[in-house]
Image (cartoon, rainbow, N blue to C red):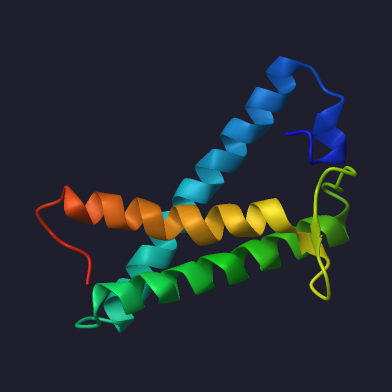
Length: 116
């Protein structure tokens, strides 16, 4: 939360509210990426499937971050490492790139319908 300029100086309740909304958006992104890729990539080995999911989730994060920055919806505090060339924060990109495939993997291990 401290990595975003607007949230860094807000109270706890505001920060939790903003982060809860962001987590909801991340959950929607996870479902959309899974549905889209699983339909296109049936039969792929799971490692390749999850790698593709990770790349698409990272690209989605970069797009969202660039859009939010361009609109002035948020800006980064000093503690946010920025990816050179892309000029977006490292933490949101890593978060989606790691958590989306991890969520799909864990869910597939405990589901009747397994991910490809």
